[in-house]
Length: 231
Image (cartoon, rainbow, N blue to C red; front, side):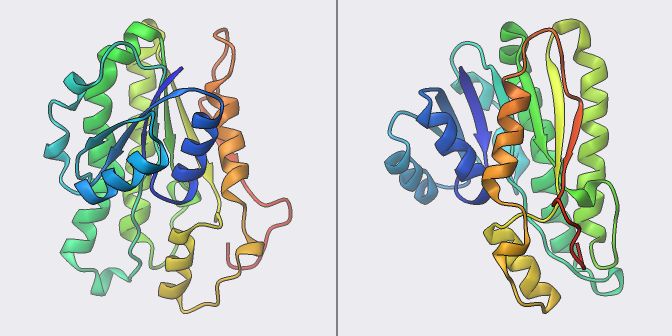
């Protein structure tokens, strides 16, 4: 199988790339700059690494022409978060989260749709529980994730006749560097043992992409077995 993946530098994306590479699949990794490209080329020597800055979605234009042949899965894992109340929300923070979390996945999907149609492939959006319910301080991030949910729903309806499957995974808080940053912004102590592991989310993603061709999983939510305060 061939997978195009964003966010492979850390967290869920890195764990997913490692699992896919470990089973011998082909990877095309989209990274934000040459320095990160060099790091991932060392980590994944068999992968094709393409440079495009998701914070500047225009850099994705033409990327589809750099990918040869069919694509079995397009995995949107990269994301950014900056918390803050609406009254103090900086325009730059709003624009970055909308660009990385919503506009870039839309642009990258458009670029790779011909490859996905040819393979009757699967698009997976790693969203967030914030894409289902917005809390105080999360307006920009949640808006980007609500938008991503709508984009996925529309794409699914458009591509049903082409055989392209579209799935959204909604993880609750997951033990990743992003979650550590969120705790810092919230002024809370970070304890990774309280949250879902990245490997658990990866298991869910692999189940979605390995599903037999006669079925699809449009949406799946991943939550802790026992709800914890403040989730």
